[in-house]
Length: 621
Image 1 (cartoon, rainbow, N blue to C red):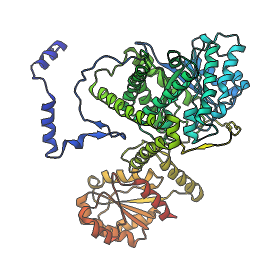
Image 2: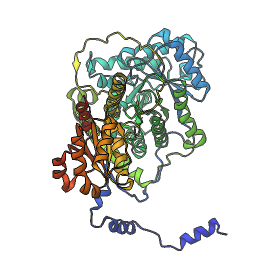
Image 3: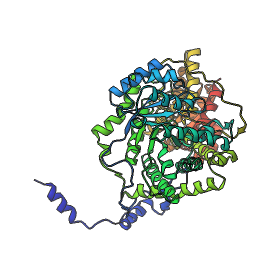
Image 4: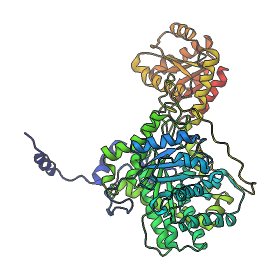
C-alpha cells in the first residue's frame, strides 16, 4: 500500500524541474513560433507571462488584520423608506454586518437610491442599532450630499455616541464631478465646503472616515486598473491637501479618508490591484513624512460586468470578484445583486449577494490567512507592475495640477476613452466574452423578476459653470443586449424572431464544431439559428431552407468539405431566395470562388460580431 511518505520519497527521486527545462519543452511545442505568442497583455500594456517563478519577497502586505473577516456590506437602495428598512433589518438578521446606504444621484445608484432627507433616514434606520458593531457606508452625490449631515443629526437625536458608530460618510465631490462632467463650483469653491463638513463630523466625535477616493468612477467608465489606481491616488491626495489647508494635521487627515475599488471577475488583476493600492498609499504617506498605516479599502463588485441576459451567470462573476477582493485584502465588500442591471433586486437576489460572502468567509475561510498571495510570482510581479505604472500616471495627473484640474483638461478622460474603445472593440469581436450575453446565449430564458419601484425625483443641482467630458458608467454587454431586445420586439410583433438557416454540409464530424460556433454567434444577437442534420445534395438543402422560414443562411462545415461542396451549396441557397449567405470560418484561398458562388460574408473567431449582427437585422427588415 502506497503512503503519503512513499509518494514524497518517489518525488525526491526525480531531479527538480527548472524554468529552462520548461522553456525547452515549450519551444519544442511552438516549433519555431515566437515565445511571445504565449505572453498576454493587459489594457495597460502590462505583460502576463504564461509561467512565473516564486517571488523573492514573501512579507505579506499590511492590511486587514490577520484572521479578521472583511465587513459584509449589503446594498440598501429602495426608494421607498419602509421597504428599505425592511430590507436592512432582514439583511442584518441574516448575516450582513454592514449596510451601504445608496442615495439617489450617487455614482453607484444606477437609477434608484434612497431619498436624501432626514425623514427618510429616520425611517430606513428604524430598529437598526448602529452603535452595536454595525458598519454604515454612505454613497452620496451632489444632490444627496446632505444625507451625511442628516445621518449625523440622527445619531445626535438618538443620544448615541458618535465615536461608537462605525460610519463612512462617503463624501466625494471629485468623483461626482467626474461622472457628471460638470460642476457649479470651482475646486477652490468646493474645498471649503467639503472640508467644513469633514471637520464638522470629526468635531462632534465621528471617528471617520468621511471622504472617499472612489475608483469605481474609472472602472465603471471602462477604464483600466492603472487608471483606477492613479485616480484614487490623485483624488486621495487632493482631499489630504484640502484637509491640511483647512487646518487639520496630516496625521489626523489621513484617518478621515478611505478608498473604494471595483472588483471584477479577473482574479489576478483584481487581487493585484487591491494589493498595489496599499503599497502605493504607503508611498504617499511616506512622502508626507508619515509612518504608513493600513488604508481602509472598500470593494464593490463591478457594474460593468453585469448582464441583463442570463443574469444568473452574474452570480459566478460576483463570486470570483468577491474571492479576489477578499484575498487582495479588502476591508469591506458590497456585492451587487445579480439582477441589478434589470432593476431593483428582489429578496432572492439580495439573499444570493449576501450569501456569496458568507459562504466564502464561513465555509471557505478566506480571511484566515493574511495576504495569501505573498510570494506568488505571478501576483507579486503584477502588483509591482501596477504600482510602477499607476505611480507614473499619478505623477502625470499631479503635473497637470491635481485630480480636478486633470479632469478639466480632459487628461484622465482621454486615457479612459482610449481604454474603453479598445475594450469595446474586443467585446464586439468576442475576443473577450460575457457568458450568457456575448457567448452561449439562451434565447428561451425565463423572465427574471425584479421589484417595482418609482425612482426618487431630485431637484436640479446648481447652474453648470465648469463643464468637461463625463466619465459615464457603461456595461460591456449592453450592445448585444440591445440586439436581443430588438429580437424580442420582433417576436412580439410578428410572432417569430429573425432566423438564420444553418446549412450544415457533410457528416456531423465535419460540421458540428462550426455549426455550434455559428449558432452561438447569431443567437448572441437574438437571431435564431435553425439547425439541421447535414446535407450532401443541393436539392435537399434548398428544400430544407425553404421550409425553415429563414431569410439568412450560413454554411457550416470543415475546410475540406467546403472545397468540395460550398460553392454548389451557396448557388443553391441563392437560387432558393436566401437574402444573405454567410460561411462559418476563414475562407483562405477559396474566398474568390466562394464569393462568386454567392457567399456574402464570413464569420470567424475574432471577426466583428457586433457589426455583422447589426447588418443582419438590416438585411431582414
